[in-house]
Image 1 (cartoon, rainbow, N blue to C red):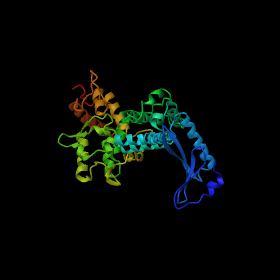
Image 2: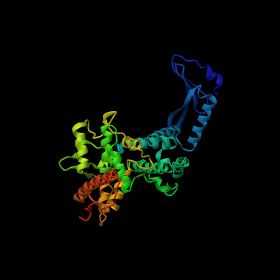
Image 3: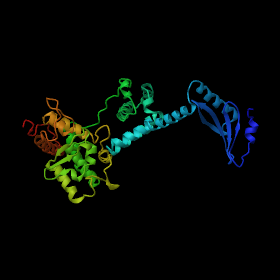
Image 4: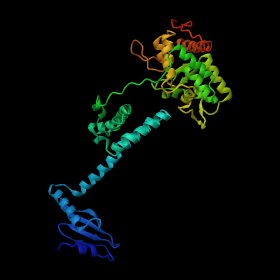
Length: 411
């Protein structure tokens, strides 16, 4: 005889566990503790099995009967409801382990640290733009339209470049998932051309002899901490990337060879790089070594020698000198050197590009190694420092002249 809701509710615990039977295999297991569990008993291939259907009163008698009927329907279609539930649980575990966020964080760890500011921006982008909509979804289940919708949301707030960066990072995460057997392919390839093209924005830079001379003269009179003063003075002389300058370590300076030797992991091209030191640059570094050396960084942070100078150190110094973001940036020293070494001092473009740390290839398409044209670049770097001194002197006398100043570019 079928159970009633009143019987289920009033069933009291006994000294031992006992069962109250409903019909069609449904039963209520009453534990001696007083807990009441719904069970569905069935046979499949001659073997008796039991399927848990929930706990009373969370699962009522009516609800338990619906669950039983669903299980019986599966049995009629030769589906074992117990095995089906197990498969769903496993699929849920697999989905959790293969969720986009899980794989992205794993990729982030394997990727390793690149730069403090860049790593911070990357993590913020993932947490702000990709994880909220995609994070809990198994990466193999994400389809191109789903990813595009997320990227379009970024684009809609006017952050077109951020949308493209998000697509690029998502592609790297998908390729990592493919490599580790958790996705079939990189779906970002399907989104080529789907986003608006970002307008190319060049970083502000001074590129005329007169303005360069005035800037260099102002740099020499800048009043700030010795660390920022030295970094600011070296920025135009070395014209390396701002991050390469502020994270420069003492052990990367080869005093005997008068050069800085940056390892591949610090370079954007992932190739080791040499920066020859002019007399002027060497003197600044020697002064720091003799008077301000502490910790591993040449330019330590004011907040502690264990971290490098803030990325805003040189930028703030430029601002205090009257150069706003639309006039000159720390990165702008590279454009200044690139332009004047080419147009005013007539050096070969491949030498300049090599010294900028760009990937430069020879006529056979092979990348130049770090020592290629090193002697020519060494002379070029000394000439560049002398040229800046010349422009500074002419600024101070009010007579800036554009000239070759004895170019050695034909050597």
